Image 1 (cartoon, rainbow, N blue to C red):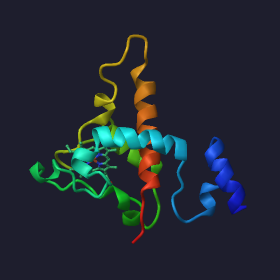
Image 2: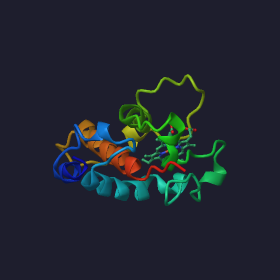
Image 3: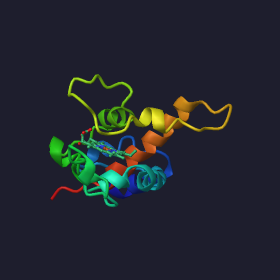
Length: 140
Ligand code: HEC
């Protein structure tokens, strides 16, 4: 079954396979797209490998999160929806004081061609970023 799952994950979706493994799974093609966006938009703060050590990190009040340990911080669970909502930022109520993370739901929808529906583009970009983050999780 595990071997069949690898093929399925590459094809279209890992639904049905994801729950069988303890490690968060990812969709390689989406993750590859997300990797590009990550280097463009996120690496300055979170570091080239997601460890929270980007060149802009020193100027922040709060240290950017180590994004390779999102699941480790949550007992091994990678909460897709929570992370997507967090990255988007438009639907966060500022209960935790000021946010140093940019509101990506606004930033990623800017300067788009006419006729493009920003929400679809924003959702797509955030989806690929989430898949990329899932692919770089480590447990140690
Ligand atoms: C200006 C610096 C900066 C940039 C750029 C940035 N972040 Fe962050 N990020 C932070 C900081 C600081 C935190 C810690 C919480 C806070 O202060 O908002 C954080 C927290 C996070 C978290 C929460 C982790 C957790 O375990 O809850 C995620 C996910 C995240 N960032 C993803 C991203 C992604 C994806 C991008 C690129 C689209 C990005 N960040 C770009 C500064 C940044």
